[in-house]
Amino acid sequence: MNTPNLTIVVPCYNEEEVLKETINQLTNVLEDLIKDNLITNESSLLFVDDGSKDQTWKIIEEENSWNPYVKGIKLAHNVGHQNALLAGLESAQHQSDCAISIDADLQDDILVIRTFVEKYLEGYDVVYGVRDKRDTDTFFKRTTAIGFYNFMKKIGINLIPNHADFRLMSKRALQELTKYKETNVFLRGIVPLIGFPSTKVMYDRKERFAGESKYPLKKMIAFAMNGITSFSVVPIRFVTVIGFISLVLSGFTGIYALVQNMLGQTISGWTSLIISIWLIGGLQLVGMGIIGEYIGKIYFEVKRRPKYAIETDLYSLENMKYSTLLEKVLANKEI
Image 1 (cartoon, rainbow, N blue to C red):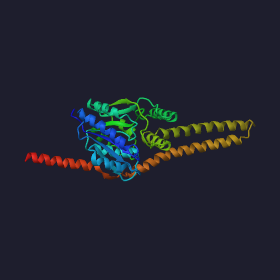
Image 2 (image 1 turned 45 degrees about the vertical axis):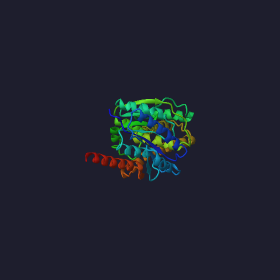
Image 3 (image 1 turned 180 degrees about the vertical axis):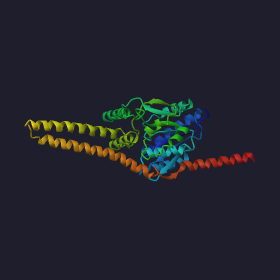
């Protein structure tokens, strides 16, 4: 296999506190890989600014002016981590033989990027970075994460446990990824569907280098709900089962009440009546909420709105300049 052109895609949202250190460390990784002839010297770091409100884009522009590896895409507004990452991957597939996605917070072990590339050279199209343990997480986050992966497995969704979005994808895997047109993007569920040869690389996750997490509890819950409802209709079927069970129980209760009335043993049941009303009412509201979640997804899908808009693209622009320069050089050689 020829030496690949690698792009490392880094989605960024308000990462001014950590970004310079991230660029410095990833630049060192690229230089080492180039030195060892594992990747070409046209390989790059692609930072996708997801509508940051701080100095993130300014830092990217400054680094781009002197660091030959740093490229950038500025999205017109905040579209969320998954869409920002997708924007970077879709841009990278045109210029690269493979792309690695990684968050800007330096929690993922950048030293295993070398192993990713080695696995790619062995013939794997997708290489998943999988956490070896979750010691850096709080008890709550660790417990809920394990529960989430177990639940997803039980309802038939094929996820890689303890894998976030730290992965390598080959050019043909990226091209297949672009064929998935859904608006509700959940890459951790989509990538395993591609089905090309894949492998895992274990690593230890670190503490965040600087700044605050961009995934508070509210966003984590929304992310989990998006993953569940994007890949399974089990929740709707569960509502149907609950409705059927409630219907059967109400039938037995009705028969029991009728028999008691015939035997003259009618018992006043105000409390039980109110509890039953609240229970059934609650189940109905939950069912309507789950069904509404799916209807809402259909609503957004049928609109077919673009998932992101690129305001400034330093990546494609510089590659066009490079291609034009290369064409001129080749033309002069022919003359």
